[in-house]
Amino acid sequence: MLAGTGMATFVFTYQALVAFLPTYLVEVKGLDGGLAAALFGLLFVVGAVTQPLGGYLADRYGERRTMLGLVVLATGTLLVLPFAGGVGLLVLVPLLGVRITIGPVTSAYIVRDLPDRIQGTGWGLLRSAFFGLGATGSTVVGVFGDAGMFDAGFLFLAGLTAVVGPLWLFVPSRDRQPPG
Image (cartoon, rainbow, N blue to C red; front, side, top):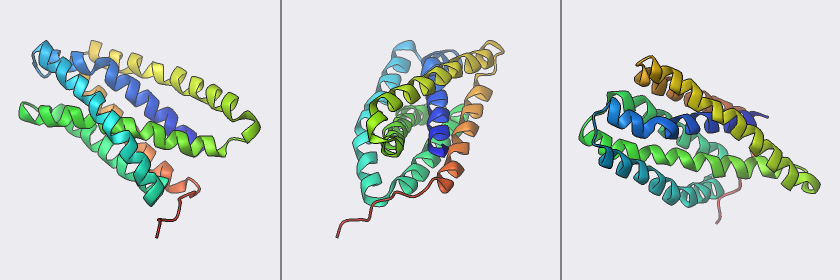
């Protein structure tokens, strides 16, 4: 249940972030559209590279420790975003992609909890619910943006991301023992 709440919160914040990040970079941060698009693309490259690393860390050190580290990094990058500019954005925006790693690590944890006979159906239903709820994140940040408060919207997302960390402190440990 707690991991599911964490996953729903992650999907909400992720969908909201990626829906408006390019617009935010152009309209609020003043970046050229081409540069904003390139940075947005790098966000996904970083996410693709860090997902296997996140899986390795979860296997080696356990999901709880890995998730806590990922949540701290994901919260920190979102928290700094409204205050960053220039060269800082060149580093920060791609680093926002690390948050993509939260999904596979959480998914692996949740799927193991489902009974074998309904694992596929159950996971499909849960993912549909997560993404249905997550789709509302774009609307919420859109309301902030329409009010000229994109920075506040991203700080709101940072706050929601921060809530996921303490949830993982109470998730039952299924951490694997380190090899050797």
